Length: 338
Image (cartoon, rainbow, N blue to C red; front, side, top):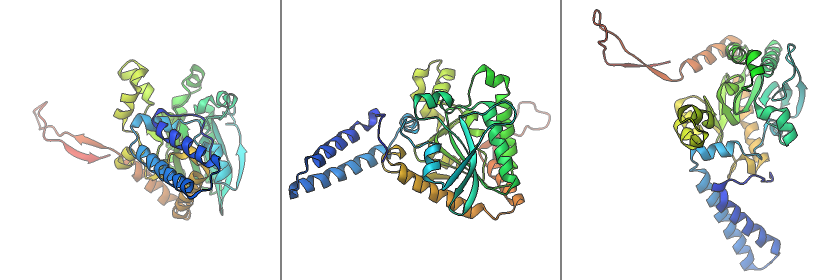
């Protein structure tokens, strides 16, 4: 079980019950009454976690997605995969530590893993730019995905970023262009692609490795066109409106599953993935193996065609037809799928 370092305000009732339970268990009282109190507290703790986490507000979901103890890509590499051999560099500019790539093995399947890494310590976070990748990171990811396609290996992408790095150097080296190129190339890559949002799925930084045959997200992750703070800065001219922005963006797993933006939601352990890395990893492994069984063996042409249709079905638009010779006159809108 993970050590909880960061404490979220809405979790206060959970912390209080955990402290009472820990104190009671440490007392070592072996009486029947003591055992009954422990069982009662455990039931109350479980019910409290269930009540709080089944009714999270969008901003609270963002806080959970950013929890410092939440399992990151490196945790899944250790707990889900049997082997991992890291590959470095984009053969053009450098090696971006915010986006890691490499060969891996999960049960009998050999795969290519790409994913964002935020870092755990302050030193690691600085080296990884808090998970905000530069153009060389996305070029590295695309190069390794093409290598996977060459050898018929499925691609597994772990998404966990507030967004692509917004610095001047990144823009000078083609940040927007390389993200667009990744999306285009992933859409036609002739090998299975499984994408999972494990924490934050922010803006183009997430989309740069987010086009796949299966796109899933963890129960308390978020996936959005922009971070709540960025949205608040644009619409309200202040980051203090991030909570309102989070609610307006409709970016939680419940919303996105209903919209058809993601295919599946992976349930987290009670109280969030940060409370039990091993259980979360076990659920992740089950999901990845299920997807691999469904996708491996499908012909490349079928994979690409189905992937194309999947993304074409997302969203709706209104088609307004104008009457001949009457500019401005319009008929009732006809709703069409994109």
